Image (cartoon, rainbow, N blue to C red; front, top):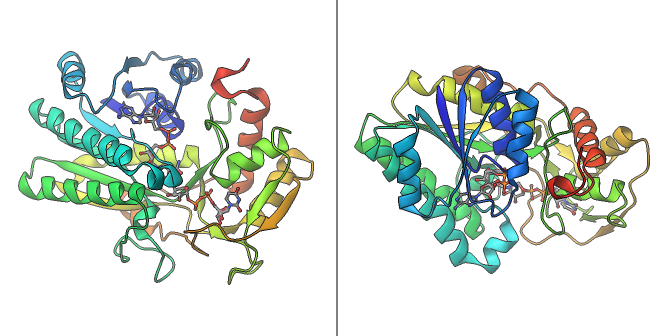
Length: 340
Ligand code: NAD
Ligand code: WQD
């Protein structure tokens, strides 16, 4: 298949491109590079020995999208393009609504015009808000706690309406839990701009000496060691989940939703210890107050994806720490640095 990846130069998109290419699919990447580097696409080509058609374009530009569909015979689209920082979305709601919603609406219109109606969408466990019951199944209560989460929930709704209105659409929304780690080659990985918001990129920068110590946001949660618990999944497992979704798009018409997670929870302190095992050195930390908006525990029931897509996470948090450290050590400045 010829698969178009919006946001394909980003963290999850670049890993997804590798898995698609290695499975024999062709890949077209559309990315504005607002949060990524074209170097990631070149590295994908190095890992796979395959060529990627790259278009620097913004999905909020309908004419640009149309031109891309005019020149490529696309079979399916994976829509990963979006702004994703929760705190930034609270500070800049209009930018988030404009970017994430316009991108999806323009993309769906361009697809429809070009008779391409196979779509996989990057949703997020953030649509569950503060979990009422654990583990989270796809029919758990949905809620919105910030503008970023609102864009994901609203897009899921748009996609349901689209599939209900026209049975030619085949749509899968994937609700990712917490992706971590990097490709085992050390050539691609997460390259956050500025101070990392997320736990593992922050720990990696402390381990690399770029930051003094990790701040653990709260050790008084109702969890075994008092720190927050999440369902961390290796980004290569997540990328393979996209491959499985693309391969199963034709199974049924309509709009389906799947959790992609491991089904296991790991606490902040367990994550920190896993990283220490990967590097062989202690990671300094201090405990501070809870981060506003954080929930105590969040993990998935991933059994629907296993049943329908034949997908299961195979790698561990230790594997992810090893690969993240390999990436961080080989590329101390990310894609913009000296690199490998
Ligand atoms: P990322 O920022 O590395 O990748 C997103 C890519 O989209 C970037 O390369 C960015 O340049 C591009 N982009 C943004 N707006 C665009 C636009 N209008 N037009 C074209 N390109 C645009 O982030 P990621 O972690 O790889 O996330 C990919 C997707 O997965 C996002 O939609 C994100 O919301 C979702 N997601 C991420 C996580 C996570 O923890 N990383 C969790 C759940 C869901
Ligand atoms: C994990 C745990 C923190 C940083 C976020 C988004 C979510 C999704 C994934 C896209 C929590 C603790 C963190 C630090 C810490 N993104 N922590 N010190 O909050 O589960 O999810 O990213 O859809 O929408 O909200 O992930 O990595 O930020 O935090 O103690 O410096 O680590 O309190 O318990 P989170 P995270």
